[in-house]
Image (cartoon, rainbow over all chains, first blue to last red; front, side, top):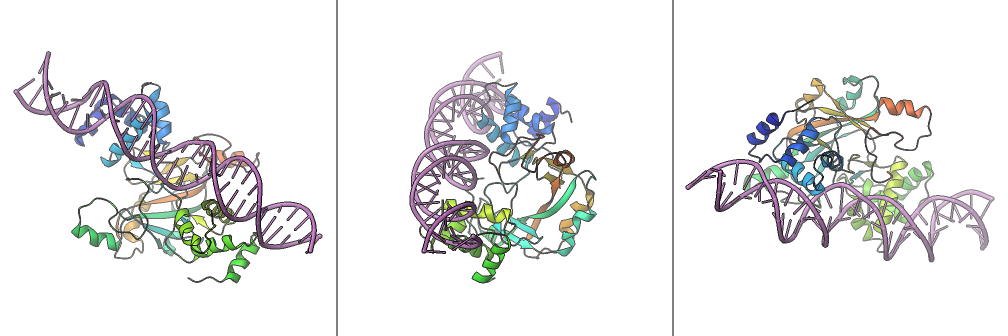
Length: 162
Length: 162
DNA sequence: TTGCTACATAAGAATGATTCCTAACAAGGA
DNA sequence: TCCTTGTTAGGAATCATTCTTATGTAGCAA
């Protein structure tokens, strides 16, 4: 999907973001693919037009665009491996604040892969539903404290700020 | 949930795994929690009983148990961040072989969070369904080649072996 | 148009989860 | 009990991501 400089400018302005050539190029590259690239892949591509580009800028820009809601991190939960000895099909509730993961058993959800509109040429072996939101404790905490991050600890906090 | 040494021995034997004290302790710790711990958290806990334990052993053991199907990595897709400029609700098909991510639009899936059996005290903001399996290309490739990993490249391969 | 200010960029160093390498060890079969 | 092979511990290496800092520039105001 092609996206014009004007579209980009409009989107950025709407979020109060400065429009810089690097920033626009990174967003353009991401908006014109459906391949869910890594930061590094984006860097490789954009660097062809901007040889001085630093990987740093890609990380910084993606983080900014993410905060502005213009891009999404597909694998939100990528920071560290999390393990489970429960290998039967089940699903997860993920707290965006304290990052706790709760199990959700819901038989109806287990049937999705037979019902969803998956293209025939993709062979599905399993699936998993992730619900994102706030757990009971974090909802309570939010009534009293400003909304920074992890205020209390069911779980160890992420290794990096965000 | 309590799990006996005998249960552990039985499960391990069934998969042809040696039963070592460290390995049993790591599995026991994981089987007795629903908190989806990180490797480091498991290490912290198990190290209380096995002061000589190395983090290395935890990683190695988890990888072994994972291959044996005794444990699961919750966030399969944790290795590197992947980005998407499509911020509208949609879902993903994830190829276990080449690790490509394909978009899936399915309006019915978008309604799940209103239908699923989520506890009332968890406030759901969004959700996402991930289907795991093999994409068309990887299915074809598997007819000819032994099943190691990434054989062809829609996408850059992971930075580490598995 | 020009100058200012705040935010953006580049470059390099630092961080930290995970993996690699290797030597000593031990489980389990013979 | 002995051997073989997979396991463990320790330390070094890897590499995505973040931090730090100095320089650059977008966008507003005059």
